[in-house]
Length: 509
Image (cartoon, rainbow, N blue to C red; front, side, top):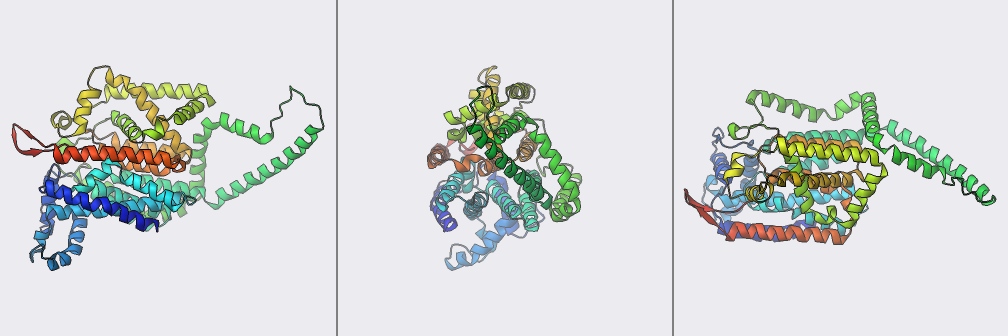
């Protein structure tokens, strides 16, 4: 019932908004001027044609062919197109590909939420999936012919299949995700690593260790029960530490929490080594795809297909700082609440010497990132149609001190994100997530909030936000709706013109 309701509710805003956008902006706009003609070449059967300005593989165009083919008989009956298949590939029909993916994406989010939180009610899971479907970067590009929505949908399908341990199917969806956007190879590696972690943690060896620990705790509980009964018959002694063994164990664990990551790494490596042939066999589909992608990079001379001079890999470490703050602001009720600030302060006090050291290291790394590795791409400086143009000029570059003043906010945002994840996932999983996010964002010289979508969704799916009340989710959804109304109104109803170029320009993410 949940997935059907979700698909129906999502369609209620996808269909009318698609009609409005296609009515006001019927012609291809921005990057669509490359994607739409290329897809139309495929509709004409000209598969050897390729626009050298396109940087991504042709996966979206192939999916659009299948989508148009499914609509073509109905279009003929309704006489909305001629007998020629190529004429059915209009900009509006191609855009509807993403409308279909948006509905599928919402259903996949719902399925993943239900898998990760089986105790959640259908109503709560449906609300969470609906709110995530309204994520501004995802919602806006649902109505344009970009690769973002299809990329997210295929990633979620890959991840859900891996969670269900259908690794061959997961690798197939991963291949499709890479054919849509090649940086998804990093997210395929993340999914594979996550699968290996889950696989090793549920191994018989691991289960035996957990059984031994359980038996040990039961033995301790019996001993402490006897100890408490004896203490009741004795005169209280203020100098006696009457905390039971289990509480002392918890305090020791807290004190030794800093070594948890090292232990997790050692434990996973040792367990994986003992199961190496089984793991290689289970995850061989991922290995084949990654090796094939490596061969492609060698053949292509890089990861980007076209316009290589404008997409040179650069060490843009400030990008991960921007991601943390943008993601935290989008979900401000989670990160900037009094409760979350209190939780972070408690975490810092729990082992304050190491926490202080980590905070200082993070601040130094943040200052170094914005000072030495804060890049201003020519597209960012010249194109006033994008919101990052104004954020760069009016905020980040408003004063030479501003980019340094934002560093503590960046660090707080990252600490908040990682802390929320660490409450539900192991430290090694959180580390893999952080490294994957860095691997995708750091080499990217251009500030594009669209690139933040997949790591944001992973955070929302896995953090302890699942246990947040309805109020938090409703507040987050309200923020998303307000941002969506503003950005879409600016796009549709505030066009402007350039003096040096013909045509209407519009504000876009």
